[in-house]
Length: 162
Image 1 (cartoon, rainbow, N blue to C red):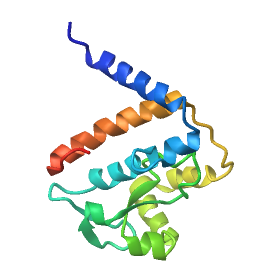
Image 2: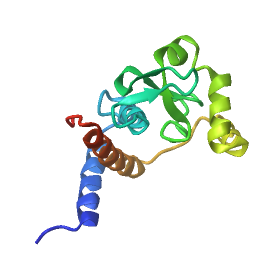
Image 3: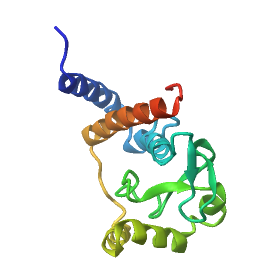
Image 4: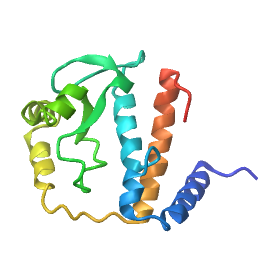
């Protein structure tokens, strides 16, 4: 008998969760390229690209191919509370993200225009404390969801899945 989509999802999440039980939380986030941080950053760039793969830096406006940009975080990615928050991570050129420290003043202007002052203040408040705790099952669910969303955007852009 064929499994329902909910059963397929639950089975995959349980499989990921079993694997995550053997890893530290830090390695779940940072293990290249299958770590959640890398997957999330890939999704941010793919999701914000147009159908031809072009994407715009949110701080300076430079337009490049999605894979030539970074996914820059307004609140540093070292803060686990916001590392996977899609309001906090947007495409940035390498110049803005790496050489200009993320261009926080320009980034803040973009976020206020996109979401309003309240959301930006909420993100800024999550900077403290930096000890947000994720459980492995939450992370397994997040990984599954990221995998599915990435597949949708890779198909849209004609990119062969990893």
